Amino acid sequence: MKLLSTTIKNNVLQSMERLLDENRMAILKANKQDLDQFDLEDQAMYDRLIVTNAKIDAMITSIKEVRSQEDPVGQTISSQKLENGLDITNKTAPFGTIMIIYESRPDVTIEAAVLAFKANNKIYLKGGKEALHSNKALTNLWHRALEENNLSTNYIQQLVLNRQETQQFLMNPPEKLDLIVPRGGERLIAFVKQHANCAVLVSGRGNNFLFIDEDANWEQSVQVILNAKTAKISACNALDKILISSNIEDYAHKLKDLYKLLSANGVETLVDSKVNEFLTEADPIEDPKIWKEEFLAMKCCLGAVDSLNGAIEKINHNSGGHSATIMTKNKENALQFMEEVDCAAVYQNASTRFTDGGQMGVGAELAISTDKLHHRGPLGLKQLVTNKYYIFGDGQIRA
Image 1 (cartoon, helix red, strand yellow):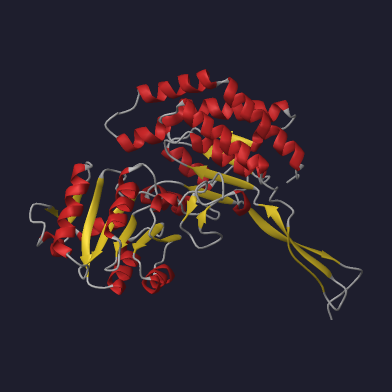
Image 2: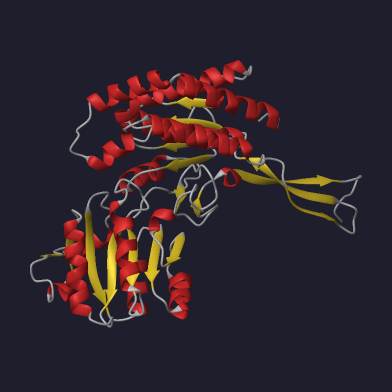
């Protein structure tokens, strides 16, 4: 693939910033077409689908942030000269062609494309049918930005495919795909893994846990729980499961306090058998499989554990590998929790809502990876490159 200069790439991004600002009404009109066909009862989906002027401002800001970042391509990772005279340099290089499959969030059409393009990759955008008009309007603006700078629109392409057509595309793409990122639930991820013929980087599933240790600051814990659970239920970094140490001081009172507070904030709380002994009015958990579910709703599970090890074991058995928090003043407990919990992001005394590229200093993100190869956590600009070895010689042969 031809490498574009940093100047050309940044010029395209600058054009896109202007076009987004100049075409606000057209974007909002396209989004209204999508909203008019939408079931308003699904609040989480609605939150992801709606575009406002504030969201357009955020799109422009994300492009500016990426434009200001250092070009990730061609950066030297290591360099050495061997005794035989070979000069070996390992540099960052583009993946090539990336495909992202996502649902309902038109802002992904901006964030995914800006990152892929700045990292010198082509990208196929496969958004959900519920955001068809919004995504089309935004992709058309990308094409105008590319054309203004004398570049092919092939760098950023929108796919409008049904399930069967998507399956065929994954199995027989028109060009070699180097990476596919499915952002969605387990069914989508399983579908892509089943049919894709290239690397698949898993993203999107949350099911995040918070453990209240016996040494926790209770008032702080309650505030963190409310933020993580209620601030944005449509986000993959929202809280779904709460574990509490049965050894915490005033255990029964604190259980009742937490349950009442969650109920007062509109959260449906299901409880395990240990908690149900004290919260007899609460709905019990009927099927243990629910501990593995991501809710994307004003709903959570509350369970009790007897030890830190018990909390770690339960989280590792059930979580999606996204984010987990321990509320504790005990630094040794916090460190053990953070070292042994198998998640992309682990916290002490903070909300899981911070698992986000912008909040973690990465900037715009393609996704939150829960895989361990090739990267874990927010996929920002620096993570959308691979590497290549450059070996310079003078006739050396291997004996």
